[in-house]
Image (cartoon, rainbow, N blue to C red; front, side, top):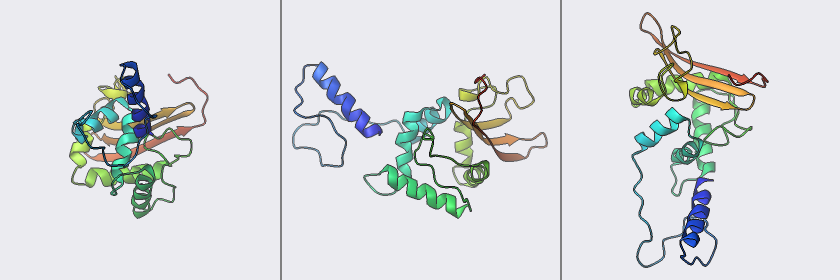
Length: 196
């Protein structure tokens, strides 16, 4: 819960700076109290947040950006989940929607087929070229900087990684020698080999 995490961290920082805080920090949709603003934060553009999320595979950013899928305001994780479920259903996926934005929940399980369908739909969308430009490049950047380096795939694939204990996933696009671009997904789960 990124908003709750922020509220707790802000409360602790204020107290550490000697600023009295009457109650524990909490996240919510209440209107701001009257008076001077304590803090104004201008977020970087979503494009830059996506670049960080995709290149570094930043899970906190992913959880926060996940909520943008919810058209309601204030956005919620449940609303995002419902939107993603509707998109997956429209693509013909029999899989359940992920329960979180980072994919760290063991309940967020998708098979390769819906990941390929999402890849394909995203690349064909109006923002497809921009999305592809934000992803790590095989053997060259981000979480793929060392993967496939020195192989014929270097520089020809862009993908998002997804890793945790016993799980290694990769979903994205690869350019073939004849200039075609193909979506792909590779999912491994339940293995016990070392990460390398």
